Image 1: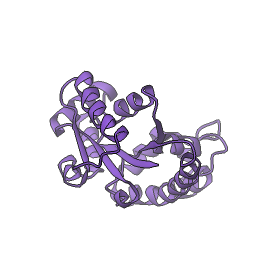
Image 2: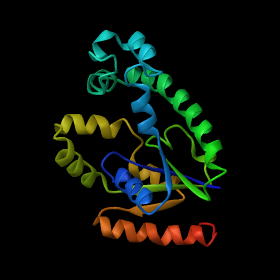
Image 3: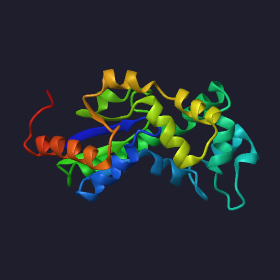
Length: 201
């Protein structure tokens, strides 16, 4: 099985790319989905997160209020690192379990993971695909989509590796500064290469 890491920066269009891959028939494992389930009612990480950040991040239904958790964790790097130390090992273990099952059924599979390069995961993949957009486009998209203040947008962008640094590390780079159609055409070209079993050059 060809195992591909799909990543990007906030507002670059990684989720759009993942949705397209699913639409054309590929299995895409989603790190955020694993995290979301782990923080739901009776989720595996609820007690550890409440122990670390206090009952204020817990909802009435017993799940973690991700907005409140984000407000706390993104205030400083120390709290963000504490959260990542809880979440990251759990997600990695889950991914390995799921991947073992995929090997039997899929020729090509993708793992949608925001912090691929930040966590030095590139060696786990046959290829890494980066959905790229210049930082000014990131800011604009985030503001339109989330309605956040400029200060909040900068906090979120600064919490990740600079997108231009990710460009230096990725196997394949997709420039998503134009339209979705343009992005999908670029992706189709690479998907065809994979189907023909050609390595990225």
